[in-house]
Amino acid sequence: MTRTVVWGGFVGAFALCLCAPEYGFPDPARPEIERSAYGKLTWQAFAGPGDPFVIGILGTDPFGARLDEAVLNEQINGHPLTVRRFRTVAEVENCQILFVDRSEAAHLGQILAALDHRSTLTVSQADGAAQRGVMIQFATENNRIRLRINVESARASGLTISSKLLRPAEIVGTERE
Image 1 (cartoon, rainbow, N blue to C red):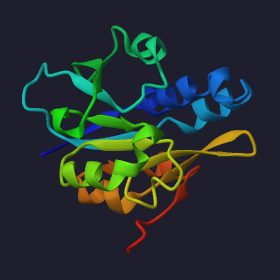
Image 2 (image 1 turned 90 degrees about the vertical axis):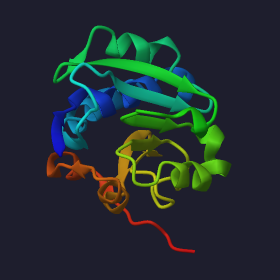
Image 3 (image 1 turned 45 degrees about the horizontal axis):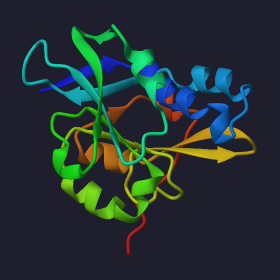
Image 4 (image 1 turned 120 degrees about the vertical axis):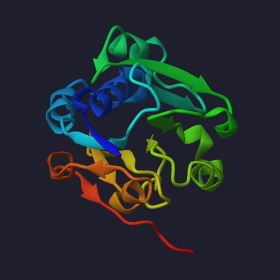
């Protein structure tokens, strides 16, 4: 069974947190991100009605408290949003969104293999991440954040990304070795 979750804030929260000046993104990028972040994503049903909607971070945490503050007291269809930080992919369980920091780029193949066929949306800012199988990559072009979306990877995990989010994105496929 799948469930559609309206998730305007998820991609936006990640992107806004990455727009912090210490990451070199100018504030004018923020309104564009907010406009492009709204959409729907279809997830497999949760195990229980009150289970948390987990946003995980694997690797170095570029967000700090900003992401925790963005999801504080927020719910999606009765599921409280929570942020969890993981040191290894083996620790990742019941995670709806997993941000894989660029510090883990060398291990991306192993991480994606461990998540294979789970309904976990993978997100990263690592160069070439979407072409390697990450579902959403934040890429910087001309001082703006662009979304690169690998629809094939999302479908393989049982996730559907709405056309509303796909419209402003660059659609990429997984490069085969």
